[in-house]
Length: 446
Image (cartoon, rainbow, N blue to C red; front, side, top):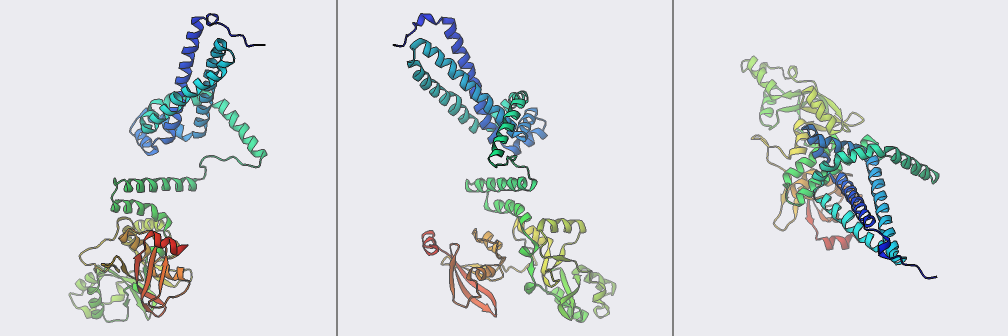
């Protein structure tokens, strides 16, 4: 039996007009929901937060939606799916009425093109290029829709969670754990900083400074302290005249004082306290008792996080601490300046000795003292050597070599060539680092 084609006159003009208007309205809703989904997921959280603080009421709606993201996405998907299905049904019904079964294929093609162009690509492209403005404009209506549809959305989410549990999958929130949320926020900031640096909007020094702030929470005191081998200490048994000469010959204003054994730190001498003692003795250095003016030493564990130590420095109003390991053995010292240098880079004044331990060579290699930290050379040379397993560049070579190298030995790893220049007993004191071309580094790693 052949399909019967109903003549066009069987469909009144009012019915066609109704279908046309209804379809256009539904597609407009579909376009708005598509734009809302894109804008509200790409919107700048930081800017919306600041706008709300500045009194922008529309930003309050956007922030509420971002705080209830699961409900927002559910309501948008529900609305978008409903209007697309209804508009498709209306168009297909009219075309089938006009052309019979051939109208099914025509309706499918027509509605697909219209939805793709006008309800998906066009609104989403506009929303992604103007995410903040679109979110502010559409935030309030979407919030109302989410509130109205929340019972339906909650029911759907409950049903989905039930189905997942039957398969042994536990449904979780987007980011419920506070530590995970903080880590995600830090990575988002770090990614934004690196992106703007690549695009030229952020200078290298600014990138290092901003990255240094984010890195503080991941660093321990042992990562940035001055090692005991590089410490300048005073013997408490020395005569006052010799103590004065040594203090004047040092660029530091605070010096640890020991008795007998250098590990036996009994105090910290401040240059200003020494000057005050000289003033009280009216310049008679021999009459001074150095041990009476030394301050009580402050010992801290080497596992203390830098953020905690920075707060401790500020609370105690002390800028100098001695670092010990779990057995109480002296490992080094740390100052407030050492922590600040992790943020702003190396701080030098007129009394600092300009020795960095990093000496670039004409051939592109770099001579480095073994005590230089990996973080320092990464900043100085804009490299990215890993610092998870070692603190100093010598420690990195020993870790990778799994042995203490001999002089003139050469190693290649992490895209660099390391040549041992000097060694003192079991300590690498100097080495030459040469960046390798990417092709050569890849072939050697393979």
